[in-house]
Image (cartoon, rainbow, N blue to C red; front, side, top):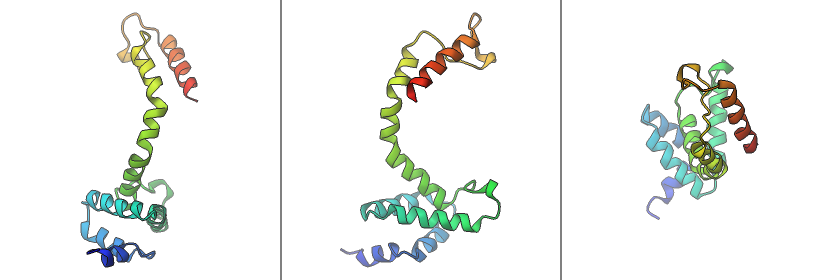
Length: 136
């Protein structure tokens, strides 16, 4: 492969090249995150990438309340990884319930300012809770 040596550098456990690329990309990290994720997924090393970057993020944060609040390479990677791996599951898990809500004549609206004239918030709440209990 033409880029095999570069790929080997990227895949090193210390992640020096990944950190350097992150520094160079600055705020424009979405493309880098996508490319890194594809490489590490292909090599079945995505857990190494995510754990290493998240551990570093945690170690650099002094205040637990602000942890993962900033848009960093670690948070961007986590977002992309979750979208890539969980989307199909979430669709499968929620599809029937969402269709039931959409096809139902009973509203699930709980916001008093958005209720229709004759709508009962308690009836809507009971209906919503019954649908949600089916999910669990």
